[in-house]
Image (cartoon, rainbow, N blue to C red; front, side, top):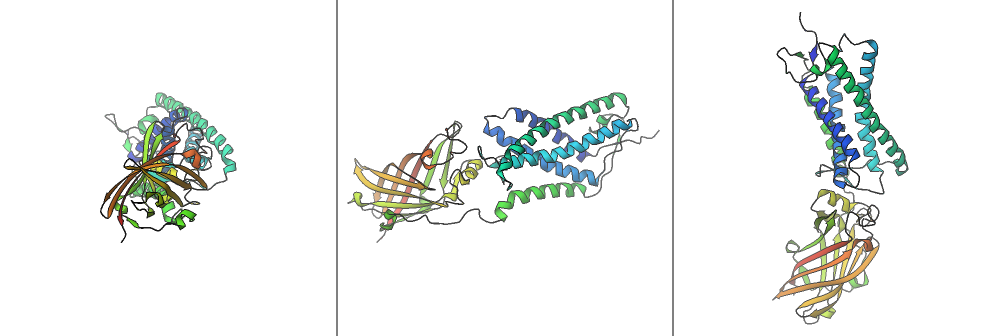
Length: 395
């Protein structure tokens, strides 16, 4: 007697088990990510991945209907099976979406989303007042997934034990000598399913770039009285110069560099006390050793580049002592200002000069990262600033 049952197509099988594994991992991760920022980022990354795969799976299912249910199912079993499947599909879309809205409205721990540490993921514009509701709904949905998962597994086991066909056999690769016939698929459905899902992913990920710069470019900070009085007599070789920053995050060293800045330097080696310099830094040009750090620095609680695109550093009260120099450095970031000692050395070679200097500031004094980490639980307060400047004397 010819077999009438069919096995699920290979693509459907792969999507089923991949999403199932991701859901099980997310359940574990949801219970084990408190006080662990890396797992929190991974939770968001896996959630977006489930959303993309579910979109592909829904499109695939619409183009390639699954095998018919077994004739051995009673009416209530068939109805329950359909409802559980519909519930799963709905939750696999709704749960990541509510999670996305949840992190988009988070303000107490506002950390950018970077998918697997590589792809910036934008927030959804949504009223912050809904955050508590979203948190409750997201949590309830997670428990509902666990409940439906239990029903799904129980139904699969029960059907496997009471039917010759067995639903599990339809969802596993062919492992028997007399395998079920593989259900035929519509031509081009693979490309269409994943093309739409990945296209939507790319469009969302690229939306900040497609919508234009998120902050002004090459803005100048308001001039101070010191800057207005600078008569520059040196020109900086920016290719051979750099401004770096470093510190510690969760016990690990982070570091970065500002790639866009300019300096006005007035300095005479014979009269160092009359010297001064003003450096204008484009805060949006900060790049750190991790993309998460780079994205975080642009956010409102850090440099807030959309509102304060430029910062200034002013060097004054220069004094020479034992071949090195001591000065004061006033750093103006956002609407805060702090003055700290600045030590540097100077190597003069005819019309050329090489300066290296270093100082340390407290990010609390400049209101950096104080919303999500006011107690320095994650990021140390101390930030080291290292400067190297190569310059030529103007005639």
